[in-house]
Length: 606
Image (tube, rainbow, N blue to C red):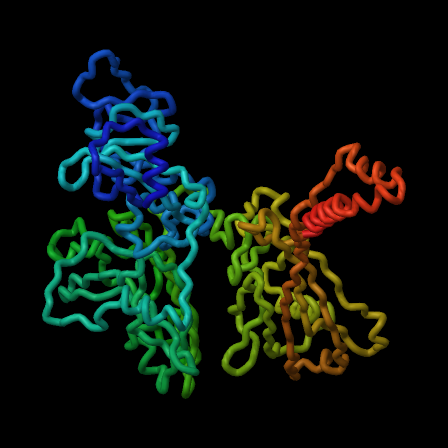
């Protein structure tokens, strides 16, 4: 407090009565900016109260400084040139308060908190406006109206510590109980309290649905797998602005009966409702302007039992939801993936549910760029981006089904996470070249990655932002096998990466990538038997190697360079030039000079 007062006194020439002191505040929250003579000033401008002072001319302000909190017109992104948490082009990233795609004037009204690095701190020092006569402040200044209707003159303090990103508060065993007591609340709320619905969705809120046929309110569900078997839990709600992908398994004792009766297999049951734009639509369910229909992208047929096959079973559901800030949900579309199941006892299959959020009326170019894995550097556990031709996708690893055989679905490679996965591939008889192509495609996935993104925000159109993946195949001649077919059984993906940039804000980038295949031979008699099948175990491995070259640590303080005057040793020469008698009388001065010299040398060594 005392430091802030001194800083303010150095900036202003105040006509302050005794006992009145300036009051610092983090921000003039709740204050309203007003138009007056005490507007923004730069260095050298004059600030005067409404009453005229004889002999002093009033200077009209002409320079506008950056707006402060509470203004009617606020720059949404005043001091953050790079929004490090903006990972989804054209869509609003949850709790990213600097994301321009959120179109939010006050992001904290929608988000429960702001991610570190998406906001900066600010500090203001305010005094009563009537006390200010002249301002020579080089810092931004504005006049605000506080909650009591009193004009306050505020100056934005130039504190270098506030220009750094905010740091997360550390919680340990010592501080946990104190923080829980300070910020904690009651665990349960009374069910008898009736609250009016909020005016708009907040991040993570469940999305409300309405079934006009039955006049029933519900929630948009995204089934997820629970337990060891990954059984589908229907009650899992979808969260607003939370783009997620879930997978779960369904088991049927009698698929012949469930084929046409089970609503989870029928595409119509996933869009026979409307979605409420905002929660306040609950107060007027008959008003269709608060309701958004779920529009199918393409026609999906109903399940049909044909002989021993249940056709048109829903295997994948994708919701595309477009939002517009506090105006809520503007458009909902749905698309399906369908498959056929063979009717047999204990039939099971997997369903995939995907919900994506994006900004309303976004440009086509932004939607084609896809998700980022960092901006610019990679973020740990984000997908490793690959490029095949002009198509950008994630690098993947093998994934197995419940019986251990290879699945069509694959694991995404996460940046910085070493992983290993495997499965069994069932091979039918075919010639050796076709067999090798099938195994290669199973190992690296389709399409085969050709390049890997150097940074997490690489653009497919900029080839310089991608590096080619090196590949080393097996040596057939080294196998020494004339009656066999050499196939790859293992793929090792090696990624070299490093931190670049400032030590205070390092950015991870990929320096190189390599595919390393390991092979083994298969006897040719298997290839000649058209009725025989065999299982080959396949393995994929990914390893990340950190090759960061850290700079040398800063050295200590430079040593002082002592320089003595040219006649420093003159007294010694005079003493030694005298006789023995004179030396006896000069012992004390010599000792004093020696002690002085030793003191200088000690200072130099410290």
